[in-house]
Amino acid sequence: MTMLLIATRNAHKVGEIRAILGDRFQFLTLKDFPGAPKVVEDANTFAGNAAKKAVELAKWLVDVQSSRFKDQGSRFFVLADDSGLEVDALNGAPGVHSARFAALDRSADGSSANTPDADNNAKLLRLLKNVPLEKRTARFHCVIALVPVQTPDARSQTPDPNLFDGVCEGGILFEPRGKNGFGYDPLFVPAGFEQTFAELGEDVKNRLSHRARALEKLKTFLTTK
Image (tube, rainbow, N blue to C red):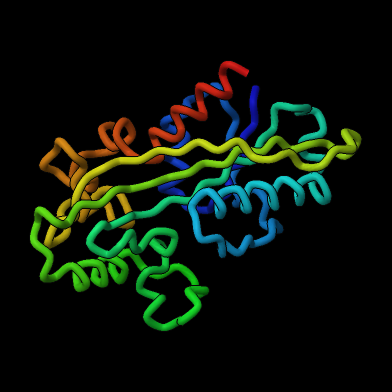
């Protein structure tokens, strides 16, 4: 069975990934590796951040944790993603800063830790206060990086990651709606729908979302290798 280390401690994200990829994979998360290094996401693109996380964690696993996967051979991968909201009226912001959007008000270099969803949503609504509905177009964008974990005796460098991207177009409301989901879900209405991601429920969201679309590409890749 293929083993995937999902490079996150976010329970919502892990649940979404597991639901989409299904039970043919064995899943680990960073909670299973409390000593894993914290990777600084300082790239200016989703692809750059996802690739950096996947590569650095794969290298760390070889150096420190090889005994835990020595029998997995070539079927052990690190899966890392970066995703966020791109709002056209804000020239693509918050983009790679989506999870720490509110913190940018307090940190000029954008290096602050993630900020609560409520704070990020409040800032987004404040910036879009005078923008009419027809100009509040936006999209969720996700890039997933997949890197095989090479055992030490392979004596090879960590290979370049395979990248899989997904986009979900939509728009931003004037106030949040719905209790499900996380992040900007209560404000985002996907194209062709009248409900927000936070109202549609997990089953529908897992068919439409940016992460779902990227994961479907990854799933095809893994099952046809």
